[in-house]
Image (cartoon, rainbow, N blue to C red; front, side, top):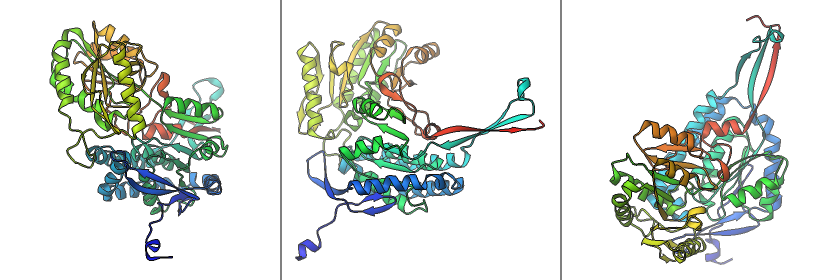
Length: 484
């Protein structure tokens, strides 16, 4: 072995039952902006995957009986460690994902909070007492309601938030005492593996977590393995429903796609603010967020004044190298996805859409784009584009605006720019989405609130407390001979 061989770095290890291991092969991680290699990671073999699952199943009963304060302290330690390594982690996110550094820094701070919320909830997550003497047959009886983990959780995470969406699966699972096996996105495994380093510093029992950047058949085996009764998936609608079909008897929580709408109502007067917010959150993460603004529905009375303001706000966004702290819009995750976005824009223009701004692609980077006159059958309206594209439509009144927003197979969140309380409550009642954001874009998410969609946008809810409820089941103990 020569000198250079001696210093050749090994792939980043995967985590099998809480221990770092090299795999049977390596996976290269490429920087989306210029295609350079960032690192390589160890891809575990089937025997390693089997050991990870076996360890999770073996420790499940012990872990669920771990005192709440022990789990809470471990989660709080993770939160503190992430905060201490925030700069390193943000650079890692930008390197593997391509999102601008300013957004990567925000993601790290959110993950810090996610684990802190989980630590707090681990201490107070409990059941309750229910009196049963509300009818004659229940006199002298009382029910104790407990939340018990359903079992080990398979957490399948996407590329667009490679740390915080992993945190939204790992933290609630550990908080309730459920072992968790993470399958990170193949394009962005580094943040999850770095989280493994932090988790390994805690006193969590062996088998409480594994992080396995597997692909292909090994992923299918995890989905179908009966020892993993819970699946938490975030990703595309197509993959999500196929996953549910492959595991029909499992408890599956899915956060899928969307083509989120922002609605400008007739009463809204601060059009500059609305334009700025929509421009920013239609293009942050290069539009690669399930709640990024895609469809902009503006009342006809405001359209003539608003649309030029929106175009100007989008035009002012700085694009380029995501490591530049001033850049706001970086590349898509890879060139194939950039080509798809470009193709959808071209398909829309072929059937009459007009490009007010952008529409061009260079490598994996797509210019922030604003379209108008788009037929309601075009993919840029009906599907999730997951790119920096805004589609503007004009509405004749609030009722028409809500109807256009509901004209979608998705229903994750919607933003409604109004100060009219009656319109706000009408939006909450009429819009077919999991969340309505009044006075802002649909892209707002607080990590402690319930988050999820209806229709093709998934099933179940994330948000720390909501996920903890999803990962557990209620069990009842009835006490007899109780004097109230």
